[in-house]
Length: 428
Image (cartoon, rainbow, N blue to C red; front, side, top):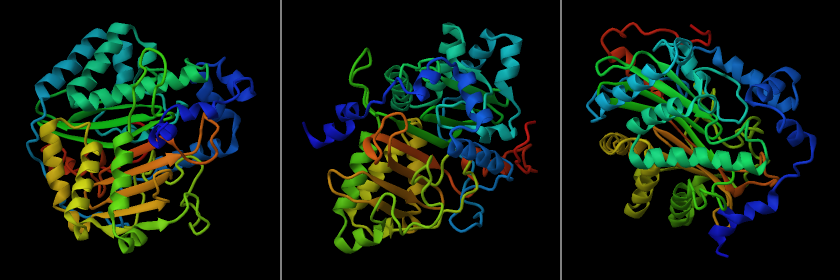
């Protein structure tokens, strides 16, 4: 079997968990709400309960945005025409609203300025239940939720989102707990009223897939988003062959391997994935090497590694290829506009690496500039039993730093939103 298949395919079956231990026998008896309540109320396991409490504290901070030095740089983002099919997107949202009950509509809809934009999370436990949960809906309403997603994303981006959802269902079947993890164990939340002329958006979040979408006329911000998979390939059942995140892995490794020896040394900020040289907090049990995950809206992430602008043509093209994969959720025209914006900052775009960079190695990398951050990380097992990071468990994310997440940097430019607000964690 090829090395790629060993790490991304069936090798995960060597790490299937013992489903007779209490963790799984208890989980198999619970629905998603009971499962989440057990984490939040019992404090077991302690590290996970501690993470939940830490996240809630972070949620109380006024929103600033991710920065590289603690200072938000102004005037990086502008209003522009990105060609979004806003009329079709609004029609999809209106079709959903027409099908649901008044109670469901009240649960689904939040003010455009609600701080609940920030309360998405990517683990399987439902820490923040809001909006409509797809696995609790009738099939027609669930399909209407997905139609909104399909109308907004590119065709390939929608396929990627569906694939992540199906892989989540596959994992739920592997651990015999489909009421907690299934293809539709995701929440949809609407912010503002669907409109072709006024700002609004939505959040779609659950295990290993979180998308935050801000819309204004023909412009879109899909940020922050998180996409992961454990394992990242379905090798049996009706969706056999479904696979995600392999291109982000392949292109990242090619980029690192293509650098000269001096540039590799500069890019590799830590040789080991859990390196003794890491300062306290650089690795944690949940995010592992990720810096910009759920509730990390205000994190200071210093630049590390090598500058993309100093790379050769081959390496720059690999960077473009990586970024195109990370922008896949955007429709084609919006993607092209965003790529052009990002390329303008190649002179202040940094690429860094953690871990080895042989064909067999698991690794982490980050590309970071004033206008985008993308992260890639191979993880150890959460449901699978691999204690070391493996290529079949992948986490990826994208942030728009300097206040760009959730369309926040654009809001003061929109008529009627000029005054802005301090975005704290109390529900409106």
